[in-house]
Length: 127
Image (cartoon, rainbow, N blue to C red; front, side, top):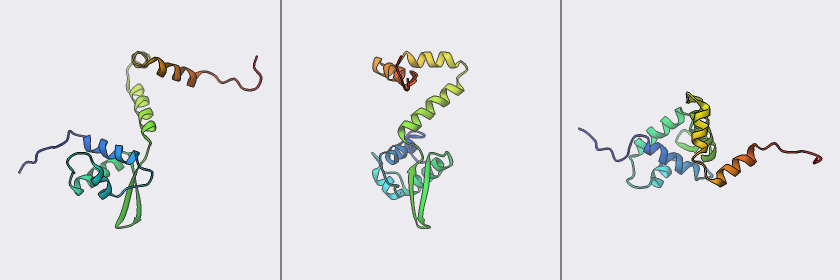
């Protein structure tokens, strides 16, 4: 018997991370399943995806008891984006070229924000 995929590979994991990153408190697998947009996956499918995300270090399991397990994102969306960009730079064969290509896609506002972030801060007296 073959099953028909309703999502692309990795799409459910991405959806689970999106759900967890929008919540303050950890969620149960049932709560996560109910929050999935579109067709709800089977409970066991959600648990499998959560297990994979836990192995990748993306999800943290918080057990109140053996039967009451909740999950939270290990990193905020901002932290994840930052880690992804740094990882891509490290994997690039030419870090400078990758940075220049990335910078070429920044808006003026993004570029100014980065300039402010890396500009040395003057402490104490001006002058």
